[in-house]
Structure formats: C-alpha cells, structure tokens
Length: 212
Image 1 (cartoon, rainbow, N blue to C red):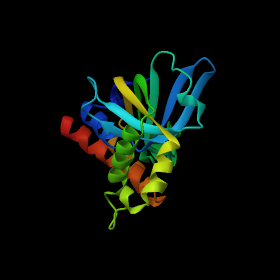
Image 2: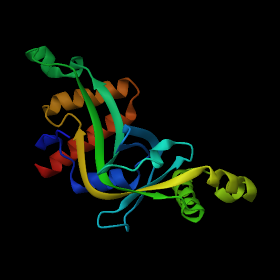
Image 3: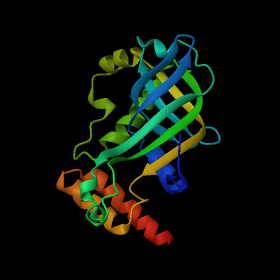
C-alpha cells in the first residue's frame, strides 16, 4: 500500500481498526487465481505474535477448499467520502485545489488457517454475535434459536483464521490541508449528512493538534 508519512496510521489507530474490523474482504491467491469474499471478522489478540482475524465461509464457497499460496490478505475499510474542492476556503484564495477522496483502511496480511470444526465455528459465531449485538437494547444470542436449527447452520459454514504477520494502515483524512480547509471539509461532510466521515476528519485534526 502506498502510505505517505502524513497519512500513516499509528499503532493506536491500527489497534482500533483491528478491535472491530466489521465486514472486510478476505483475499487469497490460489491455483485458480485471486479469490475474495466479504466476511464479518472478530479480532483475537492472543493468537500468534500479532493476533488473528477470525471469520467463516459458506461450505459451498470454494475459497476455503483451494490452498492459499503465500500470505493471504484481509482488507478492512472504514468511512470513505468524496471531498469537493468547493469546501476549501483556499479555492477562493488561489483556486489551486482539486477533488480527492478521504478514507481509512488497513491491509492485514497473514497465514490462513481453515477450521472445519463445529466446536471452533460455534465459538466464533458466539463471539461475532456478542460483538455485534452489544449495542442492542435486547441482544439476540445464539441460544435464542432452536438447537437443531443452529446445528444445521453451523454445518453449512467453515471457520477461517488469518494469523497476522504484518499490517499496513492508512488514514487519509485531509491531514495535508491547512486548518481552514479541514474545517471546510468537516462542514461539507456534515452538510451531506456523512457524520461518520466528518467525525473521522475531526478526530484526525485533533490528534494532529496534540502532536504539534
């Protein structure tokens, strides 16, 4: 990944991305070429030297059957947004501005391990459910469904574990713009209703201020 120094994510940002990876793309190189599947993941910090991302594939998905050649990759992405140059006060000053795109992403590399084991898979499903139901007023649990139904669903999936070897992460959040332009970006994103992207830019600006 191309990461200019002013867009490089620090360890705290990387840890935040890994702690709640959401749905991310698992990419593997196989004898059939590149294969990719969007999956929800949960992070296990205790696995290996750098932790692991845990998820599951449909049993009918050939990606788990084809051995991965070399490292596999999980691409995590957070809010992303088009940035209009019309939001920059500097546009009125000199006009030397162009559109761009803001985003936060991490490329997580590692060794892919397949878990065709219903006990492992059930534990994973419970961990994923706990993570994503945490904000619900009445969290759903696996035990809310009939046991026989759950057993059938578990037989239809296979666990995957990316044992992490390295992470490359980038936060492109207008850090290279003057403060007035950054304020314009935040206001423009809020006006569009993109509060997530606006919040990301605002946090990056605050962090930059603390470092300066």
